[in-house]
Image 1 (cartoon, rainbow, N blue to C red):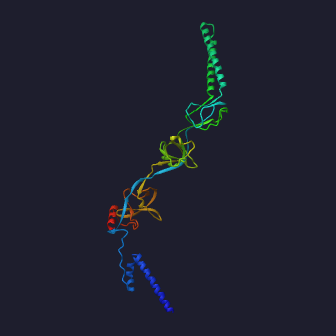
Image 2 (image 1 turned 60 degrees about the vertical axis):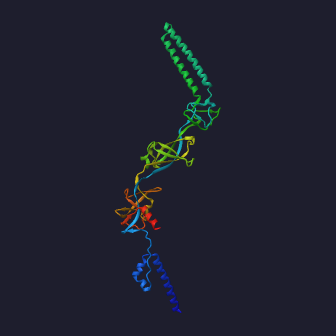
Image 3 (image 1 turned 90 degrees about the vertical axis):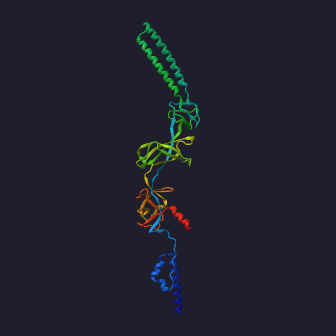
Length: 385
């Protein structure tokens, strides 16, 4: 009984071993020559299977592996920085009264555009008008007195001293009129700049003092953007260089502008420098205080530019296969920038030297390679198909 069980196990083991050998021969091309040299087929009394002629992955001519390569070119690294800034009007003035008084007239409504010198508020001016009339009367009397004494002085009936006192009184009266006119003008509150008037918090009848904020006038024909950039780009910043701003409230809309001014110090805590930019406010869509995303581009340094297919990876990092004197040379690179159709790398590559893009799987350092024309290779494949 045990002998029968042993024979069954040996037959099963032989079947498994034969299947394993068959799979080895099928999927490992190097197995057939090794089994022939070991005499396995002879001992088993079977003919060695004929090796198929599989299509090699790499066509070899004269011992050199055929590859496709693209020459190295030079590209410029695009250095671009972005920051969030606050927009503010090109000019903004808070309107206050020079004197205290009661408001008798409001000349503009909130949101209206005003011109420089336009009267925005008027204060009660009764006392100032009375003072001006009194000063004018005193001036007329002083002028008459001076003219009378001047005639008497010419006839010898008045002294020179009396004439000088009359002339002094005339000058004093003239100054009193000017002072009264100035006080009357202060009862009119005018726009110091042209722009848009903000919300008005006072009304006719309100009494205001010299400390009260009556209105805010903003000239937002242009918007200034206050933002900060890292100090590493300070040497590349110049007044007048272009910038791109995107208001966060107007997503997807970009506005071009320029750098207006650069601060003369670097913040020690953030290691940033303060920048002031300016953009035009066409259509009056921007407002004082808006948040904006600002971007600036700088001309970068030149780097070798290779085809994305040429970049390979290993445990040590990225590398490419360069073809030098007909041999494959492995060159370690650092990727600096990825573009849609190229990669900027940092490594020991020269402009114009070929870098392998296809056929990298079977390359080894120092292996002989032959760079073929991609057009000819595609034509050969078409003929075979």
